[in-house]
Amino acid sequence: MHSIGKAGGHHSSGGEDDEGDLDDDDDGDGIDEITNLNQQQELRRELIVTIEEALREQEALKRHNEELQRQIMLMDPAIYEAQSHQASGDAHAKADAQQMNEHKYLNTLANVHQVRFNLKETQDRYNKMATELQAKLNEKQAKCEEIQAQFKELKRSVAQNAVYSRTGKKIPAEFIKQKEQAEFQKDEEVNQFRLQNIALRNRLANKEKILKKKEQLADGLHLIDFEQLKIENQTLNEKIEERNEELHKLRKKITTTVVILSHTREKLQYVGAQNTHRNLELVELNDKLNDDKISLSKMKKEREVLQKENQKLRQQTGIVNKKSLKTDYDRRSEEI
Image 1 (cartoon, rainbow, N blue to C red):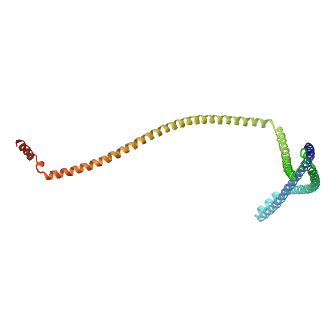
Image 2 (image 1 turned 30 degrees about the vertical axis):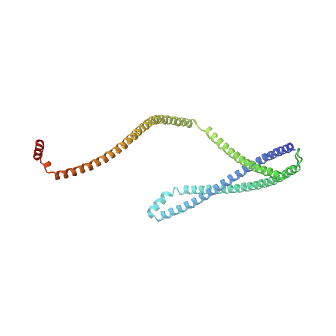
């Protein structure tokens, strides 16, 4: 049962791919024609804008010419008469030239009118073609949707009537619904990829056209252009060599700087270690100094106490203060 369903699904997907390829070809042709129509419309707009600008410029020149003639009339009559006599010989030539210019202008207007008429015909033709293509596209989309709906209904009916060979039970409706949703998502992804494929093929065609134009332009280059390109290429190669030498020098400088930096870092670590050791010694000396200060303050206090006691004793014993009396006292003590 499952093998039959897979085979039927594969065959149907193959048919859809064939129809999709045909639709893609038709859509590609239709898109190319619509692109050409858009280009024709842009060309028509550019021509109309150019013609309008030329007409405005002609009107401005006419007004400027009239203003100049008016200024000439307001000039000195003698100068004006001299200039008129001097220009009388060229009057017929200017008149003929003016008639020729008017004739060219009328021919140009006729050509412009013909171009507008041709553009209108082309626009009508391409509008009709676009309408026909849109109708064909709508018809094919409707037919495709109908075929897809019939095929989905067929698959749904086959799945609902199918049973498992071992258990004899039918496939659950929830499982069928999940598979249909997954298939719908895959179809959406396929449609997106098809649209991307069409857009990429159009871009590829445009790039190929541009490449062909560039190749034709390259074929039309003369020997002088190639010589000039050779000279420019040689100049650029010399600049590249100079830049390579500068880059080599910079690399050497960077290497030297890295070595100096590494040495400086090692020295910094060594100096940091010595600094730490000196800081420890400084802490020990500060502690010892504090202890010495404390002992010195104690000794000063003891000295003050002893000085006070000595002063009191000196005040109490007058003999001690005089050396002669003390010597006599000692001598008499020995005699006794």
